[in-house]
Image 1 (cartoon, rainbow, N blue to C red):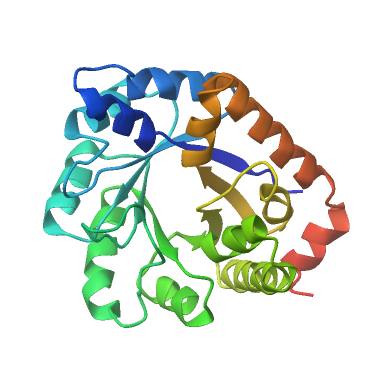
Image 2 (tube, rainbow, N blue to C red):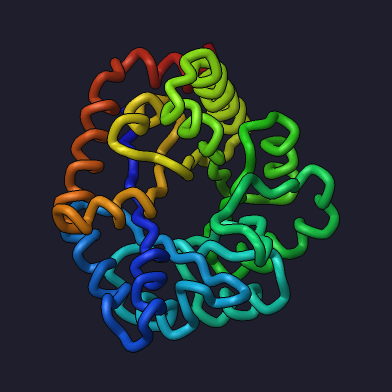
Length: 260
């Protein structure tokens, strides 16, 4: 079966640091702890307003080379220039609005193919693996392929919100949407990631979707670290994901690969 990677988003380590200034707590130290506890890559979102991660954080993370760096970024000339200078291993293109507390939904690529294709092309020519943060909609998946992306990251906010609310009807519907989206994306050659809103209780069902090869998780694990430690919170998430993945039988992945 395909293994599943765990990406740790360290944005809110920087949020806490910025609340008082200075360098503590240090996002680079958090990244080291996360990797030691089982993270496969580090995600950091450099926003236009620099509300958490800052340029120096990206430079230090890149120089440290602890694990592959996934740079979340808006589709702007400023961020393109930074990505081309830093050359992270991966870049995830996300929507961004100043007034939002966190990313609220997927990027609409279907209506912007002509604009986004050259942007994606520049990143890929620099050797950067490009993923697109999208809602689990077939039109967005097909557009992602058209603009030349390597991967998609499915926005799991609606699924996770339903799980938190105990809304079993919506939960079932949203999980089915994720499963169908992952299957479609993999069938047309896109690598499939997922993220937004995961916790210990809701992550298992998504980790068990055979086509999904990476989950990106941040806010919940940083919050849990206040009560245990970052190493323990990441380690527990790693164990839950691996256990969910272990429930798959070889025939699950073989059948999906054959398109049946």
